[in-house]
Image (cartoon, rainbow, N blue to C red):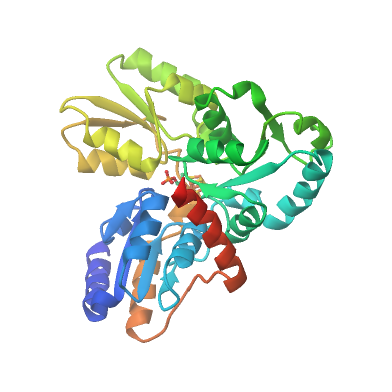
Length: 346
Ligand code: 13P
Ligand code: SF4
């Protein structure tokens, strides 16, 4: 079945030529990554989209990534997501409407202070636009610390969305761990806005369901079994996991860590399982182990990009039909671009 599908994909690509570029996030299945012109982290892929001359950018990733590609590419290009079901649950944990209501509360509780909202790339375009409007910006897992520094130069406090773990790990990196408050505005037993705003860093209560499942015991067990093994994890992991690891970084940092390893070294990978599998294939000279030991750390959103859907969108393009185009509304696009540009400046 795979051989037949590959033939169909190649035939469609031959027909479409330079009109199409395929981008694949590091967490995509092998059958997608193998057809991608570029494989990388979410930020690198947006930049590849911007550099691409192609009329169609087929995005092997999740909705917020395709939206970022649409914001960055010019209006004549279409960004296509092979499955409309590929939505990152963490991005959905900070809906712009909810944040807007919470923003009124928190700014009302601190009328004399300037709060700067920072949103992680893993968020929808309307939230990026909201952050731009309020003087804030976007960041990725590799430049979150710089975004915090920018915000504290400009204002007094930070509201970080949606990933509380990346926010906490960044606060530690900056030596600001005593300034953190977690905030769930809808938790009747949680802290009130007036309480959280007494701290300099307010963390929205969002998280990645894949990375949150890694625990300190995964690392302790591994170190007991394999004292020679090194551990690299993504900063969406809990604080105690990040603290117990040897290296922490974005998916591209994880790739570079294994690329730069000495032959015979052992690296355990604390992130989505597909990347661990790719690294094992790409670097046979290094021993690559999934930190969790089995296949439990699978991102269901990334998994929605089935190779059969990739075949479908390509064959439809050959027939002149554009399917699953991701289009950010023009007003949002302009503002979200401002939030992304501020990130590029830092
Ligand atoms: P990167 O930006 O590091 O590629 O991560 C994206 C992501 O979804 C992590 O869960
Ligand atoms: Fe979202 Fe987590 Fe999946 Fe990344 S791994 S796309 S943050 S759910």
